[in-house]
Amino acid sequence: MKLLDCTLRDGGYVNDWKWGKQTAHDIVRLLTEAGVDFVEVGFLRNVEIFNENITVANRIEELNTFLPKSKRNCMYSAMAMRSNYDVSKLSPYSGEGIEIIRVTAHEYDIEEGIAFAEKVQKLGYKVSINPINIMGYTDAQILSIIANVNMVHPWQFCIVDTFGSMKNHDLDRIVGIVDKILSNDIQLGLHLHENMSLGCSLSQRFVEKELQRPISIDGSLMGMGRNPGNLPLELISNYLNEYKQ
Image 1 (tube, rainbow, N blue to C red):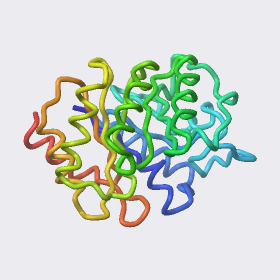
Image 2: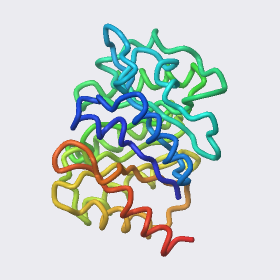
Image 3: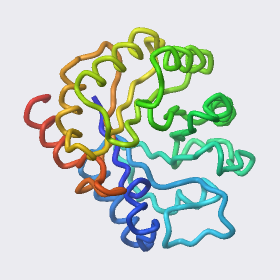
Image 4: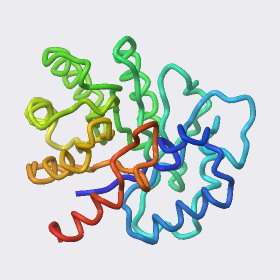
């Protein structure tokens, strides 16, 4: 069971990713010291010029400037959307710095997104495939996506409830479909939003399933993100500390 903090990436929708270099660096450092397993440092996007006070960049080397000197047991990630990032800008993984790239795509370009993820994976990164708004897919479409994901065989597949419309029975249905078809050695992630104030409840339900594969849950500090925000990292952390030692 792992936790991923996406404050500097998803939380950036609130402040246009204008964290300030020192604040961004401090957030990564303190999350690392707190024992968070994965920290997402920002977005890879096609931008004219890198601004060291904004956690959006053209190149992985630029996002790596926000990392602390000591990574302890933490791993770092960045997110790239297939439709707004030129993968030719991405350097091969050097063995240091950000080693996870989370690839996201819409329903209309999901096949291109999976192909994009395969290109990223060939550069040596651990890849997570995160289709936007899984609640917008039929069961048949989810099965088709997972079949294609298995062919690429990424490090992780993530269930993303983009609009916070997931309820308990939706989580049970989708996790059941994905877990049954997804290759056993691919990790499963969950990304929730608080539109119905169910993020913490759904995350606990996900944990209690005790799936026979590594799982991770996304959260952000104080739930920071597009209104009404993400799953608050503090809530799921407290739950895991208390009940899942």
